[in-house]
Length: 336
Image: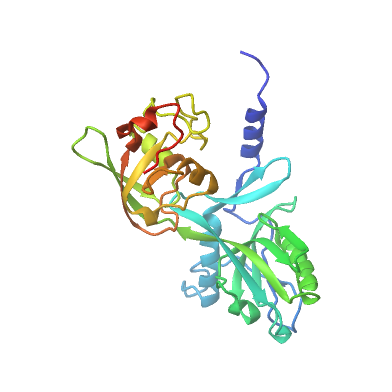
Protein backbone atom coordinates (compact mmCIF):
# COMPACT_ATOMS: atom_id res chain seq x y z
CA UNK A 1 0.00 0.00 0.00
CA UNK A 2 1.35 3.41 -0.95
CA UNK A 3 2.31 5.79 1.83
CA UNK A 4 0.82 8.74 -0.05
CA UNK A 5 -2.66 10.08 0.61
CA UNK A 6 -4.94 10.77 -2.33
CA UNK A 7 -6.22 14.30 -2.93
CA UNK A 8 -9.72 13.17 -1.95
CA UNK A 9 -8.42 11.81 1.36
CA UNK A 10 -6.47 15.00 2.05
CA UNK A 11 -9.55 17.12 1.39
CA UNK A 12 -11.61 14.89 3.67
CA UNK A 13 -9.05 15.10 6.46
CA UNK A 14 -8.79 18.86 6.07
CA UNK A 15 -12.55 19.27 6.13
CA UNK A 16 -12.92 17.16 9.25
CA UNK A 17 -10.15 19.12 10.93
CA UNK A 18 -11.95 22.40 10.25
CA UNK A 19 -15.26 21.31 11.75
CA UNK A 20 -16.26 22.74 15.10
CA UNK A 21 -19.46 23.05 17.07
CA UNK A 22 -21.03 26.01 18.80
CA UNK A 23 -21.39 24.29 22.17
CA UNK A 24 -19.66 27.12 23.98
CA UNK A 25 -18.63 30.71 23.39
CA UNK A 26 -15.04 31.56 22.57
CA UNK A 27 -15.29 35.16 23.73
CA UNK A 28 -17.91 37.43 25.37
CA UNK A 29 -21.14 37.70 23.44
CA UNK A 30 -22.16 40.99 21.88
CA UNK A 31 -25.27 42.37 20.26
CA UNK A 32 -25.62 44.81 17.38
CA UNK A 33 -28.78 46.89 17.82
CA UNK A 34 -29.72 48.63 14.58
CA UNK A 35 -33.18 49.79 15.57
CA UNK A 36 -32.27 52.33 18.26
CA UNK A 37 -30.25 55.52 18.67
CA UNK A 38 -31.11 56.94 15.27
CA UNK A 39 -31.65 55.39 11.85
CA UNK A 40 -28.22 53.76 11.35
CA UNK A 41 -26.48 53.29 14.69
CA UNK A 42 -23.37 51.18 15.11
CA UNK A 43 -23.72 50.77 18.85
CA UNK A 44 -22.27 47.71 20.54
CA UNK A 45 -23.37 46.57 23.94
CA UNK A 46 -22.32 43.70 26.15
CA UNK A 47 -24.52 40.66 26.54
CA UNK A 48 -24.26 38.12 29.33
CA UNK A 49 -24.66 34.39 28.96
CA UNK A 50 -28.13 33.76 30.36
CA UNK A 51 -29.12 30.36 31.66
CA UNK A 52 -32.47 29.34 33.09
CA UNK A 53 -32.49 29.66 36.86
CA UNK A 54 -29.57 32.07 37.01
CA UNK A 55 -31.38 34.66 39.12
CA UNK A 56 -32.18 34.48 42.80
CA UNK A 57 -35.68 33.07 42.29
CA UNK A 58 -34.51 30.28 39.95
CA UNK A 59 -37.13 31.54 37.52
CA UNK A 60 -35.75 32.74 34.16
CA UNK A 61 -36.62 36.26 33.13
CA UNK A 62 -38.08 37.06 29.72
CA UNK A 63 -34.64 38.16 28.53
CA UNK A 64 -33.07 34.94 29.79
CA UNK A 65 -35.72 32.85 28.05
CA UNK A 66 -35.08 34.68 24.78
CA UNK A 67 -31.36 34.04 25.01
CA UNK A 68 -31.87 30.40 25.95
CA UNK A 69 -33.88 30.02 22.73
CA UNK A 70 -30.87 31.24 20.73
CA UNK A 71 -28.55 29.04 22.75
CA UNK A 72 -30.66 25.99 21.92
CA UNK A 73 -30.40 26.77 18.19
CA UNK A 74 -26.64 27.29 18.43
CA UNK A 75 -26.17 23.96 20.21
CA UNK A 76 -27.70 22.13 17.22
CA UNK A 77 -25.41 23.70 14.62
CA UNK A 78 -21.89 23.04 13.41
CA UNK A 79 -19.69 24.86 10.93
CA UNK A 80 -17.96 23.03 8.08
CA UNK A 81 -15.86 23.94 5.07
CA UNK A 82 -17.76 23.24 1.86
CA UNK A 83 -15.00 24.45 -0.49
CA UNK A 84 -11.49 24.11 0.89
CA UNK A 85 -9.75 26.15 -1.81
CA UNK A 86 -12.22 29.04 -1.75
CA UNK A 87 -12.69 28.94 2.03
CA UNK A 88 -16.47 28.72 1.76
CA UNK A 89 -18.09 27.79 5.06
CA UNK A 90 -21.52 26.33 5.64
CA UNK A 91 -23.76 25.45 8.55
CA UNK A 92 -24.93 21.91 9.16
CA UNK A 93 -27.00 20.25 11.88
CA UNK A 94 -25.52 17.97 14.52
CA UNK A 95 -28.99 16.68 15.36
CA UNK A 96 -30.33 14.72 12.37
CA UNK A 97 -33.91 15.48 13.40
CA UNK A 98 -33.34 19.05 12.20
CA UNK A 99 -32.41 20.63 8.90
CA UNK A 100 -31.61 24.07 7.50
CA UNK A 101 -34.14 25.90 5.36
CA UNK A 102 -32.82 28.59 3.00
CA UNK A 103 -35.00 31.73 2.97
CA UNK A 104 -34.59 34.58 0.47
CA UNK A 105 -36.00 37.91 1.65
CA UNK A 106 -35.46 41.66 1.35
CA UNK A 107 -35.69 44.76 3.57
CA UNK A 108 -37.03 48.05 2.19
CA UNK A 109 -35.01 50.96 3.61
CA UNK A 110 -37.15 53.85 2.35
CA UNK A 111 -38.33 54.60 5.91
CA UNK A 112 -34.91 55.57 7.25
CA UNK A 113 -36.25 56.66 10.63
CA UNK A 114 -37.31 53.06 11.34
CA UNK A 115 -33.75 51.78 10.99
CA UNK A 116 -32.69 48.46 9.57
CA UNK A 117 -34.48 46.76 12.44
CA UNK A 118 -32.20 43.78 13.13
CA UNK A 119 -30.47 42.96 16.40
CA UNK A 120 -27.67 40.43 15.93
CA UNK A 121 -26.23 38.35 18.75
CA UNK A 122 -22.85 36.67 18.44
CA UNK A 123 -23.17 33.19 19.91
CA UNK A 124 -19.60 32.08 19.24
CA UNK A 125 -16.45 33.39 17.64
CA UNK A 126 -12.99 32.12 16.75
CA UNK A 127 -9.80 34.20 16.28
CA UNK A 128 -9.69 33.54 12.52
CA UNK A 129 -12.97 35.36 11.84
CA UNK A 130 -15.32 32.41 11.97
CA UNK A 131 -18.31 32.39 14.25
CA UNK A 132 -22.05 32.16 14.63
CA UNK A 133 -24.30 35.23 14.60
CA UNK A 134 -28.05 34.85 15.09
CA UNK A 135 -30.86 37.37 14.70
CA UNK A 136 -32.18 38.06 18.20
CA UNK A 137 -34.72 40.80 17.47
CA UNK A 138 -36.70 41.95 14.42
CA UNK A 139 -38.18 45.47 14.42
CA UNK A 140 -38.46 48.54 12.18
CA UNK A 141 -38.04 47.95 8.45
CA UNK A 142 -36.96 44.34 9.00
CA UNK A 143 -40.35 43.55 10.55
CA UNK A 144 -41.94 44.29 7.15
CA UNK A 145 -39.69 41.92 5.20
CA UNK A 146 -41.43 39.40 2.96
CA UNK A 147 -40.97 36.49 3.54
CA UNK A 148 -40.73 37.34 7.25
CA UNK A 149 -37.44 37.26 9.15
CA UNK A 150 -37.54 35.18 12.33
CA UNK A 151 -35.62 35.32 15.58
CA UNK A 152 -32.94 32.62 15.44
CA UNK A 153 -32.22 33.00 11.71
CA UNK A 154 -28.58 33.18 10.63
CA UNK A 155 -27.65 35.52 7.77
CA UNK A 156 -25.75 33.57 5.12
CA UNK A 157 -25.68 36.09 2.28
CA UNK A 158 -26.15 39.82 1.65
CA UNK A 159 -26.89 41.55 -1.66
CA UNK A 160 -27.52 45.20 -2.56
CA UNK A 161 -27.68 47.49 -5.57
CA UNK A 162 -27.03 44.80 -8.15
CA UNK A 163 -23.27 45.16 -7.56
CA UNK A 164 -22.67 44.02 -3.99
CA UNK A 165 -22.92 40.33 -3.15
CA UNK A 166 -21.20 38.78 -0.15
CA UNK A 167 -21.48 35.48 1.73
CA UNK A 168 -21.27 35.72 5.52
CA UNK A 169 -22.01 32.10 6.43
CA UNK A 170 -19.83 31.23 9.40
CA UNK A 171 -18.60 34.82 9.82
CA UNK A 172 -18.26 36.31 13.29
CA UNK A 173 -19.86 39.48 14.61
CA UNK A 174 -17.26 41.91 13.24
CA UNK A 175 -17.31 40.55 9.69
CA UNK A 176 -21.11 40.34 9.58
CA UNK A 177 -21.57 43.92 10.80
CA UNK A 178 -18.96 45.19 8.34
CA UNK A 179 -20.71 43.58 5.36
CA UNK A 180 -24.13 44.84 6.50
CA UNK A 181 -22.67 48.36 6.62
CA UNK A 182 -21.32 48.05 3.07
CA UNK A 183 -24.64 46.76 1.78
CA UNK A 184 -26.56 49.54 3.53
CA UNK A 185 -24.41 52.25 1.98
CA UNK A 186 -24.82 50.83 -1.52
CA UNK A 187 -28.56 50.28 -1.05
CA UNK A 188 -29.14 53.86 0.09
CA UNK A 189 -27.52 55.11 -3.13
CA UNK A 190 -29.52 52.79 -5.39
CA UNK A 191 -32.89 51.09 -4.86
CA UNK A 192 -32.90 51.40 -1.04
CA UNK A 193 -33.31 47.66 -0.58
CA UNK A 194 -31.10 45.01 1.03
CA UNK A 195 -31.55 41.37 0.03
CA UNK A 196 -30.75 38.69 2.59
CA UNK A 197 -30.29 34.94 2.39
CA UNK A 198 -31.11 33.30 5.72
CA UNK A 199 -30.44 29.86 7.17
CA UNK A 200 -33.33 28.76 9.40
CA UNK A 201 -33.25 25.73 11.70
CA UNK A 202 -36.40 23.64 11.16
CA UNK A 203 -37.54 20.27 12.42
CA UNK A 204 -37.55 17.73 9.61
CA UNK A 205 -40.99 16.32 8.79
CA UNK A 206 -41.56 12.58 9.09
CA UNK A 207 -42.36 10.74 5.88
CA UNK A 208 -43.62 7.17 5.41
CA UNK A 209 -42.40 5.50 2.20
CA UNK A 210 -44.26 2.35 1.10
CA UNK A 211 -42.45 0.31 -1.56
CA UNK A 212 -44.11 -2.32 -3.77
CA UNK A 213 -41.46 -4.75 -5.02
CA UNK A 214 -41.64 -6.88 -8.14
CA UNK A 215 -42.85 -10.39 -7.27
CA UNK A 216 -43.53 -9.56 -3.60
CA UNK A 217 -47.04 -9.58 -2.13
CA UNK A 218 -46.37 -7.21 0.78
CA UNK A 219 -45.07 -3.68 0.55
CA UNK A 220 -42.06 -2.56 2.57
CA UNK A 221 -42.72 0.43 4.83
CA UNK A 222 -39.84 2.81 5.57
CA UNK A 223 -39.79 5.70 8.04
CA UNK A 224 -37.86 8.66 6.68
CA UNK A 225 -37.11 12.29 7.47
CA UNK A 226 -37.62 15.13 5.02
CA UNK A 227 -34.43 15.87 3.11
CA UNK A 228 -33.26 12.29 2.59
CA UNK A 229 -32.13 11.19 -0.85
CA UNK A 230 -34.56 8.57 -2.16
CA UNK A 231 -31.92 6.30 -3.74
CA UNK A 232 -29.78 6.19 -0.61
CA UNK A 233 -32.86 5.61 1.54
CA UNK A 234 -34.00 2.61 -0.52
CA UNK A 235 -30.54 1.05 -0.77
CA UNK A 236 -29.94 1.49 2.97
CA UNK A 237 -33.07 -0.58 3.58
CA UNK A 238 -31.93 -3.32 1.21
CA UNK A 239 -34.47 -2.58 -1.53
CA UNK A 240 -33.42 -3.98 -4.91
CA UNK A 241 -33.42 -0.85 -7.01
CA UNK A 242 -31.61 -1.73 -10.23
CA UNK A 243 -32.43 -3.95 -13.19
CA UNK A 244 -29.00 -4.50 -14.71
CA UNK A 245 -30.50 -4.92 -18.17
CA UNK A 246 -31.76 -1.34 -18.24
CA UNK A 247 -30.03 0.79 -20.85
CA UNK A 248 -28.19 3.87 -19.64
CA UNK A 249 -29.17 7.41 -20.56
CA UNK A 250 -25.56 8.66 -20.68
CA UNK A 251 -24.28 5.60 -22.59
CA UNK A 252 -27.21 4.23 -24.65
CA UNK A 253 -25.32 1.16 -25.82
CA UNK A 254 -24.21 0.05 -22.35
CA UNK A 255 -25.84 -1.33 -19.23
CA UNK A 256 -25.07 -1.00 -15.54
CA UNK A 257 -25.41 2.06 -13.31
CA UNK A 258 -23.43 5.19 -12.48
CA UNK A 259 -23.39 4.56 -8.69
CA UNK A 260 -25.73 7.42 -7.90
CA UNK A 261 -24.01 10.14 -9.90
CA UNK A 262 -27.34 11.10 -11.48
CA UNK A 263 -26.32 10.41 -15.07
CA UNK A 264 -27.47 6.96 -16.18
CA UNK A 265 -31.20 7.03 -15.35
CA UNK A 266 -31.39 3.37 -14.29
CA UNK A 267 -32.52 3.81 -10.66
CA UNK A 268 -36.12 4.40 -11.71
CA UNK A 269 -39.20 4.28 -9.48
CA UNK A 270 -42.88 4.81 -10.24
CA UNK A 271 -44.63 7.12 -7.77
CA UNK A 272 -48.20 5.95 -7.17
CA UNK A 273 -49.05 8.37 -4.35
CA UNK A 274 -47.45 11.38 -2.71
CA UNK A 275 -45.65 12.90 -5.70
CA UNK A 276 -46.16 16.32 -4.10
CA UNK A 277 -44.00 15.18 -1.17
CA UNK A 278 -40.96 14.81 -3.44
CA UNK A 279 -38.56 17.46 -4.67
CA UNK A 280 -39.29 18.83 -8.18
CA UNK A 281 -37.27 17.54 -11.13
CA UNK A 282 -34.11 19.43 -12.00
CA UNK A 283 -33.10 19.99 -15.63
CA UNK A 284 -30.94 16.86 -15.80
CA UNK A 285 -33.71 14.62 -14.51
CA UNK A 286 -36.13 16.18 -17.00
CA UNK A 287 -33.79 15.14 -19.81
CA UNK A 288 -33.46 11.63 -18.40
CA UNK A 289 -37.23 11.23 -18.03
CA UNK A 290 -38.16 12.74 -21.40
CA UNK A 291 -40.72 10.52 -23.11
CA UNK A 292 -41.26 8.38 -20.03
CA UNK A 293 -44.43 8.28 -17.89
CA UNK A 294 -44.92 11.35 -15.72
CA UNK A 295 -45.12 9.20 -12.60
CA UNK A 296 -41.56 7.92 -13.01
CA UNK A 297 -38.64 9.47 -11.13
CA UNK A 298 -34.88 8.95 -11.05
CA UNK A 299 -34.43 8.11 -7.38
CA UNK A 300 -30.85 9.41 -7.17
CA UNK A 301 -32.06 12.92 -8.07
CA UNK A 302 -35.13 12.84 -5.84
CA UNK A 303 -35.37 14.16 -2.28
CA UNK A 304 -38.06 12.88 0.07
CA UNK A 305 -40.15 15.62 1.69
CA UNK A 306 -38.76 18.36 -0.52
CA UNK A 307 -41.29 20.83 0.91
CA UNK A 308 -40.77 19.56 4.50
CA UNK A 309 -44.37 18.38 4.79
CA UNK A 310 -45.32 15.07 6.49
CA UNK A 311 -47.22 12.37 4.64
CA UNK A 312 -47.09 9.02 2.86
CA UNK A 313 -45.37 8.16 -0.42
CA UNK A 314 -46.25 4.97 -2.30
CA UNK A 315 -43.95 3.78 -5.07
CA UNK A 316 -42.79 0.73 -6.98
CA UNK A 317 -39.27 -0.09 -8.12
CA UNK A 318 -37.95 -1.04 -11.57
CA UNK A 319 -41.02 0.11 -13.54
CA UNK A 320 -38.95 -0.03 -16.75
CA UNK A 321 -38.53 -3.81 -16.44
CA UNK A 322 -42.05 -4.32 -17.80
CA UNK A 323 -41.18 -2.59 -21.08
CA UNK A 324 -38.97 -4.34 -23.60
CA UNK A 325 -37.96 -1.07 -25.22
CA UNK A 326 -36.46 0.13 -21.93
CA UNK A 327 -34.13 -2.87 -21.94
CA UNK A 328 -33.04 -2.40 -25.55
CA UNK A 329 -29.70 -0.52 -25.65
CA UNK A 330 -30.62 1.01 -28.99
CA UNK A 331 -33.66 2.90 -27.65
CA UNK A 332 -33.10 6.01 -25.51
CA UNK A 333 -36.60 6.62 -24.17
CA UNK A 334 -40.12 5.31 -24.00
CA UNK A 335 -42.85 7.23 -25.82
CA UNK A 336 -46.31 6.73 -24.31
